[in-house]
Length: 79
Image (cartoon, rainbow, N blue to C red; front, side, top):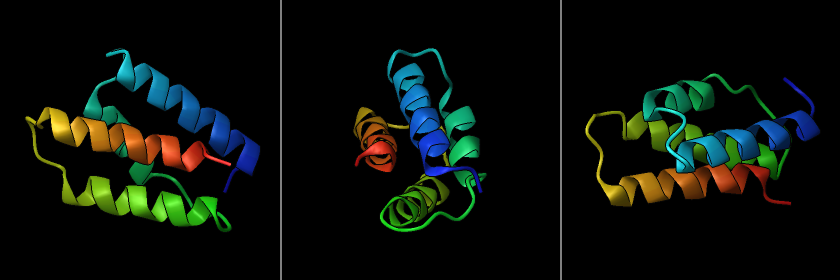
């Protein structure tokens, strides 16, 4: 488990890169699935993102799924 500040910074970076097309979805998915346990509220959001990416693991993905991906990543770093 990293610190909450590290998690927030990493989530923002991953989200920005993914949104800009500089990071592949599979790389984002692997990053999310590799996150450890964190205390609430961030831990709850990490678990939601893990579940989302675990369920939506097939390529190609629709634009709607990408938008939810981005929302899940933004939620991890939300205060």
